[in-house]
Length: 152
Image (cartoon, rainbow, N blue to C red; front, side):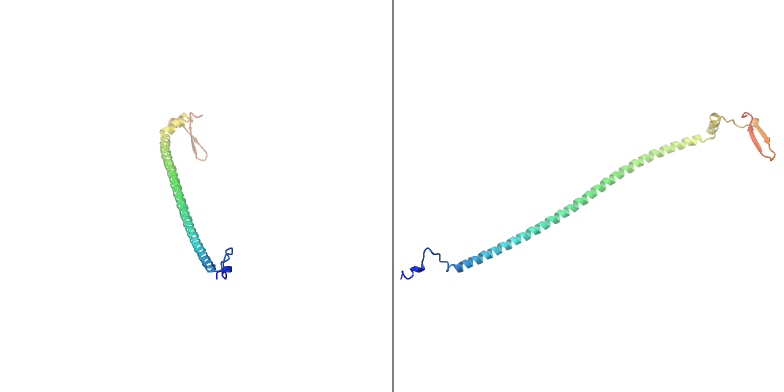
């Protein structure tokens, strides 16, 4: 009996026929594991994409906030510069108004009757008309001209 079945047990030959269902099962399990790994990888990839998208959104919001902060700072600086220029212009206006009052006072002082007479006599060499130095000339048409005797 041992000799009858001895040809079936070739120890150099790998008999895989009975192991095929096990290999098929192992292949199914490996395939299922690969599918599960692929699903996990896809899920991880999807989560990674989602995290990357959220990070990009956060970066965009941060950029917008920084831009708004920069614009606000720039507007404050511009406002401060304008305020300083206004204050300098107001100071200059006060100085100019004081000079204007001073010049108006001098002008008013120069326009007085005594100053005009003094200027006419001293600078221009004019003589005041008095009844003693008046000369009346008659004209054919009736016009009169008044001249001073000293101004010959």
